[in-house]
Image (cartoon, rainbow, N blue to C red; front, side, top):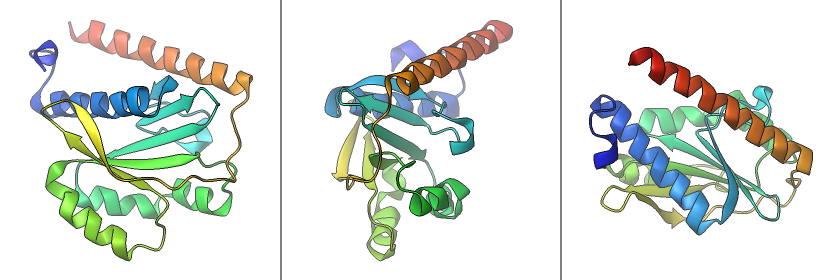
Length: 172
C-alpha cells in the first residue's frame, strides 16, 4: 500500500490495489504464467480488466466491479451475449472481483441469475488478495490458446505498458 502513496488520487489508488489483488489471484492461486491488464486477446472481444493464461493454455478472465449497478450492467454487455452464443471464444473460467460493500447484493442477485457459471472473488484489503467465495464453472467448450495467441497477448500487454509509461511521463 505504501508503494502507491502519492502516485495518484484515492480512487486510482483503490483501483490499483483491487487490480493487484486480482493479479495475485491469477498468479498465485490459478498459477497463470501470463497476466494481462486492460488488454484482451482480440479487440472485438473487448478489454477485460485482467486476463490470465495457465501453463496448459487455459484462459481465465477477471472483471472488476466496484458498484452493484456496474455488476448488473455487465449481463447486458454484448461480450456476455457473444460468450453465451459461442462458448468456444469465451474463457475457460470467468470471475467477477467485487468490493466488500456490494458482496451481499451480488450474492443475492447471483442466486437468482440464470447464468451461474461465473465465479465471485471478494477483495481482501488487508492482504491485497481476492478471496474466492464462489468457484467458476469450467467452460469445457473453450479452446486452449495457441502459442501464437499467447505471444499476441504478451505483445498487446507490452503495448499497454508503453502507453501507461507515456501517460505517467506526461503527468510528471
